[in-house]
Length: 230
Length: 190
Image (cartoon, rainbow over all chains, first blue to last red; front, top):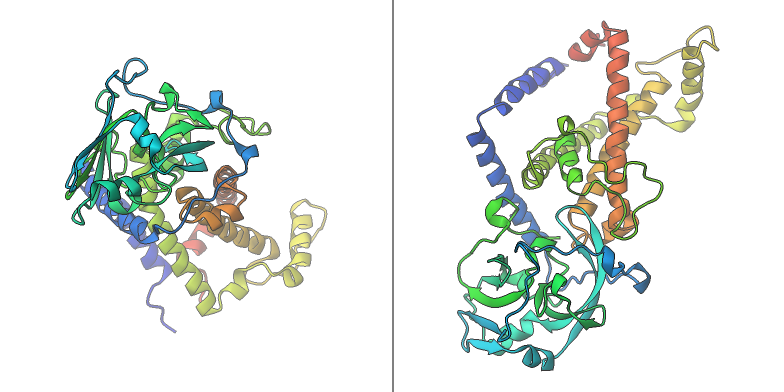
């Protein structure tokens, strides 16, 4: 029986495509950008708002000294005295919340494994208020497909898709491991969720904006994948 | 895949969770040498890794479908009841314990064992990769491997085993250069 694809033809084809792969960097970056779009598509298909990240047992808690904390400022960022969190964008009732006001809202707690883009993992407990609760309170528009998070850490920011933002485990956290958040982990309030990589979880929050269009992020603008799903 | 994977590893060249690194791993905090890495930096390597991975999966699936549909797996896959004694005899022959090679089919028992293990490593490297790529959305897969950090170990181990397989393969080809011709042409047509 005559074979349609012989080994010879296959190897010739392989040699030709290898030659193509040695192409200029513009073609390579176009290829990578296309594949990133494809991967985001798959990520969104895979994501489910009702799928909760499993909670590891307390025995897996990471010693706090071993839990890394990053910021981009030259020194540890501290909140200004008059700190308050602004909620804006396309919402019915733009609001400003003090830390005490946030603490009076329904509290959520979870023990979660953190996944860093670098490859390490660490476990901690986080306490705060669900972002979906805040979205409901301020009356976020149905047209808000993205949520932007800004901070007082030298302009560090990130933007999320609305589905991940309204996931029940996506919270504005003011507590860690049973006490108030320390400055190295983003005091007074940080974004925390198990469904995104660490760099998407903005610390030292100042603003949360519900947006109709996509915005970037500190690391995303430098080449990290925008979706950053886990 | 290997180069970009090692570039990703270089961002955290350790095994085990933070605060609980595995004691048995001898290369904690030793980044792989730069000549082995590909992608420039972490973000670049991730883009390459997650782009090329689709082609690896696509390739693997086509290969497995062909193997099963054509019945070719019968010639290549190691079936313990059929091939164990042949593999042992072949091993003995290579070690010069046995004077004559055992009767061999198209592939001998040892070749089948190598072939099958490479397919197995390939499947496990893809599955463990998915487990560390989406440890929350695919939590059941990650749990099957024993958790995120164990899945990372499995993923890196598969790379090491595939590297050993490739090097052994190349050494054997270098020792028997004439086999190259058969590999390219597919051997004599039956």
